[in-house]
Image (cartoon, rainbow, N blue to C red; front, side, top):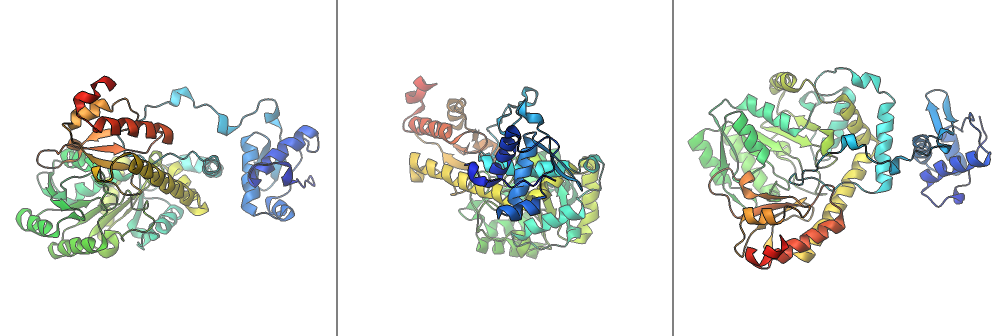
Length: 466
């Protein structure tokens, strides 16, 4: 083993990056030779008076650069293969075969662009890849014990403490919603939602041939009296709610209204399907409906908005053990299982704190983008939450949702007309404007200024900008 004691002051990079930098420097200078075994991570951490994780990250970064290779039980060895052909993952161009068109109409979280955070995310992928082969096998539905432990820990931050036998890792929220509503209602039966609701719920109701009825809302969400009246008249089979940072209106149902809704649902024994896609975004928000009425509520904690849509994972909590086997059977029939690779990565990120770091970034960036909107648009001209990924924008001055959508088509931000969200009646002249996804902050600023300028007058005045 090489008695290597690097001087971190020789590099201005963060300490974990400095370790990788110094491996390369010492390899070039001859102080390290190909085949040398580096000190164990804990020993080097003690020598350098740094955290073990700092050294571990440094070795992972060096391995990414092709400078070292690690073998479980043997140690980390210098290879030097990258000196002739540098392979730095931060600078790797994307494979054009994997290029995809970004759908700006989707309500996406801002994408991480912090190099340290991205490096940390990649470390998780490297760690998962170390046990790759078992993850390529078929597995039982719902996740391993380790995955369920991570899910329980994650859900616990929202005040939920269900037993593991009621927790399932599913391949995204949408398949889970499809399975749940398929269990709760038969074709032709009625389910309830907000009158302005998530378009995916409208699609699911249509696919299952359910009668979706929208309930009137005020600034706090659906009206409890309207819910009670619908229960009396329609005998609905379930209530769908997106209660936190609701898509598209951005409202969050306050605690008192949640209690009132739960009381009505309990009176009529009405199952609640809680789509908590944005529940983790507010740092302090109302407890989920599943915490107030756990025996009535199917809770769906999707990871698309708080970690990344590409993971295609959601944590589902069944209301009781009787609901478990029908749900598992339905999910197996349609999806077999969630990707073990994706589950392992999410579990790793939750366990090592990367998930928290991603969530902090999303909160900070969403907040910065909402501050940008507030500086450009009049305060009373739109609805938004300080951390929402979109704004809900009523149109004035003769603008219609179709003309405005056409005008903004090439701006780089997603504008979706209210038709997509309206359950009943005539859609209002309102659009959802998305602020997240891959669009950079400065480009977003330009698009918002373009939008604000157009809204100052009628569509005819903006014709020259088409």
